[in-house]
Length: 160
Image 1 (cartoon, one colour):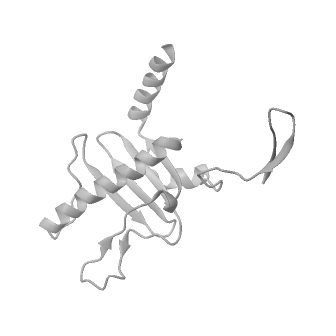
Image 2: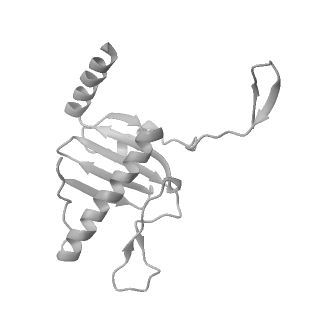
Image 3: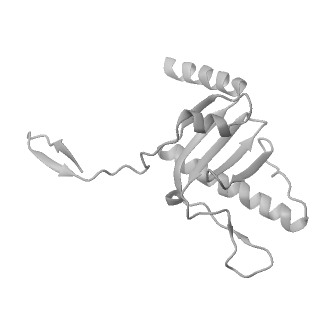
């Protein structure tokens, strides 16, 4: 709870309505999991955060569809490049990397979530959909080239 002033000068206690927890990963933790040589990152917030979770679920659906057609896991075909998904169980981080774009999204997820639901009893476990409530933090890491393009875009945008 924090105290805020309203427009009349009165103080009142309000509960924090932050959607994202404050235990954001430290820079050394982020960079240790980043693709080699990629040191530029942006914390994803608001609509970007929601969009990245949706992107993960869409790409995971494509990977599932490909895996049903073949026993060997493959990268997902994508109009904007190939995506690769990695699950790192120890730090509890899900990586969605698109090398063609030079972007890797890192999802730091809660300890209860795993990418597969093995409780179904089926021979093949089902993929568990990633929900916003499962994600503690979402970080977008960029290759040096992608980051340079991002900065150019930001500069152009700020001129208007």
